[in-house]
Length: 133
Image 1 (tube, rainbow, N blue to C red):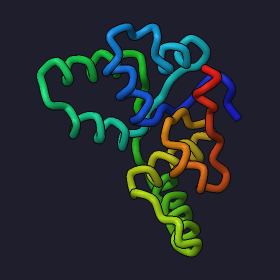
Image 2: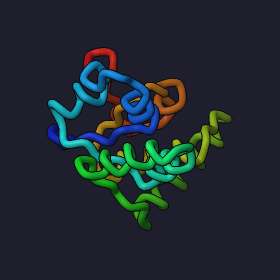
Image 3: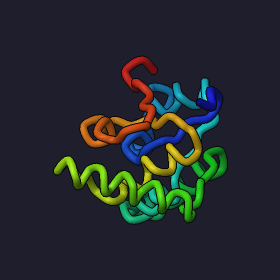
Image 4: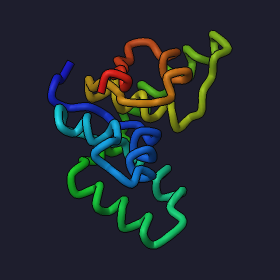
């Protein structure tokens, strides 16, 4: 596992954007220890939820220090495997979460998320315990 890099889920970014005191956010504490990355799917989710010009500015500020990992063929393959596994267990989650998890697995990254109920269903996915951040 790459100790210095971590994939950040949309839930952690949204928490950061909503907090007035950014230094009290989990993302702030994570960025003190890790190089933060996001999936293009997370960027998509943030852009879809952007309702004001200020929201868009905040997203662009984040992108200056958070690298975006593009969705590629390898991530697509991993996503299909995750989907098939979850479907066989009757434990499907949203496609976007599958894509984010596959991005983490593809990059050998842990995932920082508040949405543990969905992501803990995925084999070979390392989750960061955000409560310890």
